[in-house]
Length: 274
Image: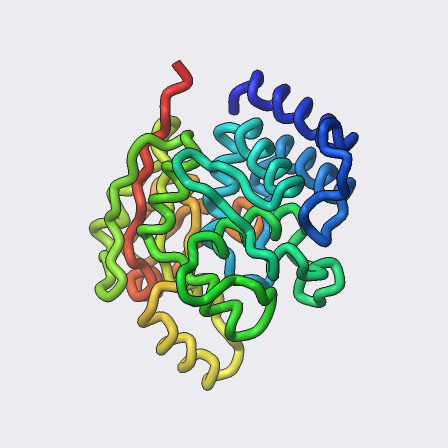
């Protein structure tokens, strides 16, 4: 993280908290102080971005990388989005629909695991990119369908942050990529790697019928994680560190489980600070 960017981000949050130059409560049914408090937390620790029980793993991964690489840019996006309901993000214009902005998110039960600022930033990005199914319900099957994020959208969003100059798509939505491909993966200071997986690789339900369900669900990739270590493929297991669900996590998985749930990655080239 750039120290200068972190200092600029903190200054932006302070100005936003006071409402300088706005004179209005904002464009959302959200609390300005709660948004400011959360942005301060994310500037200090970008790994805390949380989607809770919502299906916003794609936007969450992008925001985590953005706050890590350029917190001032991410805060500028969030504060302008709150005040005006729309913001320019690189070459992308993010416009939150009126329905999304009027949603009383603080009163929604499923909102408890996803802070207001996180939800606003992610939901607006997801909703603005959708063409047929608007993202306006933070719960239920309609939310799950509207929140689906394909590799093409991830690539667009990553480049729009301007911390990434190019993204190479090494995913496949139908065929698994295999252990040989995974074994080549290693993040670096100038490279971010986002894995596309079936999230069933990270849990084993206690009941047999849920395990059968997960086996079927894993036929379709449904989750994005940010790789934070090389992928170590051993004789019996696969080990790696990744970011997801608001924290850095370590995984040690049976080879067959990882292989069944791994669908490739996006390799993003990070813009040099120089």
